[in-house]
Image (cartoon, rainbow, N blue to C red; front, side):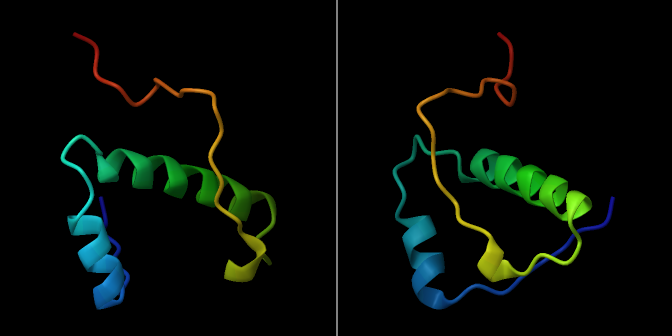
Length: 67
């Protein structure tokens, strides 16, 4: 699988590193990227300013590991 990278500014990097230990940043990013790709597949002419990230009260447990 190909790896994609994007640069982030130092302030954002420091804020990510300062998140509490219980926050699994990669799981949030995986979900956000999945939604982002689905929207681009529907309309490839979208631009970054067309996206607004929000949260919902619903819990999505599809990314959690089963015990």
